[in-house]
Image 1 (cartoon, rainbow over the protein chains, first blue to last red):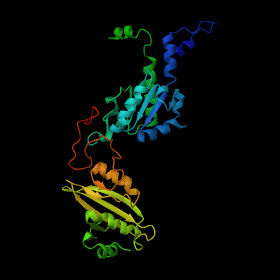
Image 2: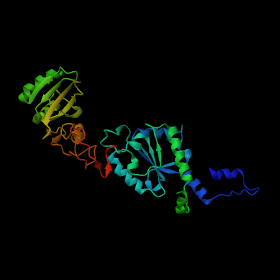
Image 3: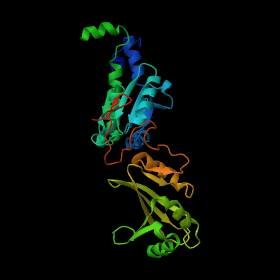
Image 4: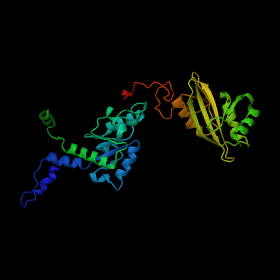
Length: 172
Length: 158
């Protein structure tokens, strides 16, 4: 992270760090992501291993929340059936901005083994809500969860908070 | 009691309502029962002192092309014997008497058979869908089921 690297070279004797407020805010945001866990199938079982002490998901600063109002991102882990798709949409809309989505496993990425004959399965949760990070696997290993989480953190830490429009136009 | 002995007892009690007995299949031997008599037969199997089938292991719906079928796997905890009953009903009018009053297991199993296979269980007190959403159209496990194109504005096919 850019902000912490500046600590290596502080102003002599002053203990002062020069940096952008945006970096500070993004650093805080990316390192304290509270999530709404939407466990639907076996990926949620794998996610239990991720949460347990061997892999310790909370070292990323994530805290599981049971309410979408308190969550920064939603973790869709498993097979999204049409019956559940309506509920996911409602929960996503209840989350406060800025909000992110991690789609875990083949089922919620693209329908998985139900892609052809699954009359009841939504072929990818990205058909109803915008997904930021896809974690492939059936189910993914905990290491894949870790990489997905780091990808989300790096995405958040690069986001513009001030002068968004100006920065977007400059990129285009 | 063996399945063929149960068949003989039922035959003397119900006569023509017991259609056939088959133990040539590799599966459990089964008894075909006339559809509108299945509640009476099950009532007798549950409450007769010789049978005492107090446990409905499984109730299954089948698609047989022209007909739909229902299979009952019964077990007696006391005598450790079991029996399989089968009934068929035409697909155009798939009415089968409900055994939900006899075994509580049948409540959800019949709702499932109704939901996925479209068997209309007469006498069931709460015959609503159990797996699919309540506003789902059609019965998905039927062979002639056609997957809808959209559900609530979401595309169904890949």
